[in-house]
Image 1: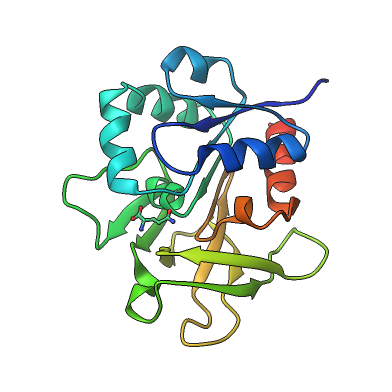
Image 2: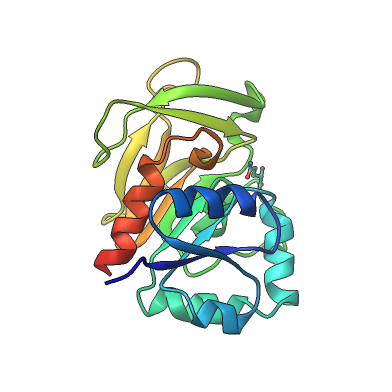
Length: 200
Ligand code: GLN
């Protein structure tokens, strides 16, 4: 089998960085903005950016229903930061009109760390990712306040004021992190997702 075709939802956010990180992890990566482009991929990354804007543009570009359908059909999706918010069944501190996709059974709080610090970096140990803790970059990030049964917690903040907060989860083929692995040059999380797409 060739390289898995993985799209990066290119409505808003740091699309290019994810395309580069996916390519480095062995995927055939490309931006996806139209339903026909979505049809041509086996997995999707929803990048960091601004979830309220991504939500609005998903409607304008008529991508909401196609993405919901693909998720329901089992397509692997990885959401980072704003992408995590777009994959949450429930969002706290969101805008009343923002809406996510068919998502992970979890409640996330938007801009959660903001009350302490806007942006910070911390080591996060990730279940299923070998090679030591991940150097995680958080930028006005959400955290996960609770998960349903069946949602696997992959990582938590280890110390500081936000210690124990959940920042990486997986439910079936859906993966989400509060932080931005595409900004640090560590390919392990993108490799993890590429493997997930390959296995799906
Ligand atoms: N605060 C942003 C939101 O609500 C997420 C920030 C990010 O993706 N870096 O969508």
